[in-house]
Image 1 (tube, rainbow, N blue to C red):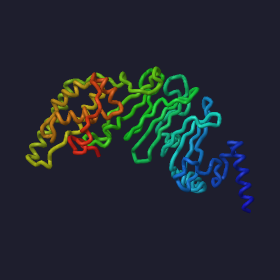
Image 2 (image 1 turned 180 degrees about the vertical axis):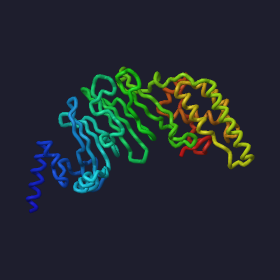
Image 3 (image 1 turned 60 degrees about the vertical axis):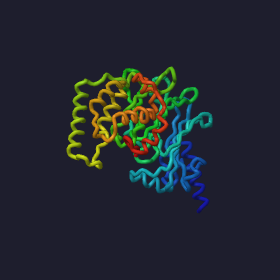
Image 4 (image 1 turned 30 degrees about the vertical axis):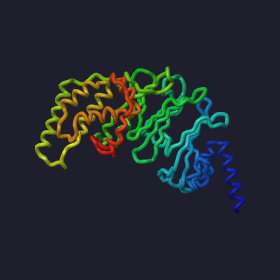
Length: 346
């Protein structure tokens, strides 16, 4: 009986390899792509490897692999019930001539499992370079953190056109102008966890494919925006100043009730700076500032411009956009941040 089962499994595997239709009809306890763990999955114990999909594009063989913990039979039963099996890791391989030309591994990679992400299908020319590309979105598995967007060009040799890492928020590919390429919209992760700025207010950055450099880079033309009407900023500054005065009147000399710099002030300043309007941001700060914020205006500005912003991966471009000279973070920035002045990092 045991010999019969083994022979039957081998025959089914051979049939699946020869005929895709047969593969779709394979019984759930004998998945055609089930394989022993590879060396790359060596740390996952009794997991097994499954090929999620394979495609041929531009002379390349694209393969998406998963490491799963539950048995093949249990995984098949879960999927029949419409449930998603637990995937421990995923690995993408770009093969040609029997060799792996490029590989990427993450907790999760397969865009086909998340149609709501609306990633372009493999082979789409997202960069407008006239060559097919592949877009993958990696996820670390840690809640809403962290994501990595990969754009790989399938030319004579594979090239990584973009590798964008975020801590909060998923990078998006959007066509914002008449050019054939897609822009990448990403939230700057520099301020994630800063208690003065909610994660929902992180400044956005636009990246665009540069054919001269052959990669995606900071899109200064798309980032630059005319300043908002002066009257609108003055009205916002007045509201912030009045709110601080009201809080001071209510709290009196209660040191425990001292307000931090309001997130609305920080958000508006960053919006102005990321649009190339630093002089307007300084003016807004002067008009909105209150001594009741528990920190001096000069200390807050130093922290923002000499510690926070210089940590951004886009700092050189942001400084250039505003006519500033980019400098490295001050040596004492880590100590000031740990002390919570003027805002701590969670």
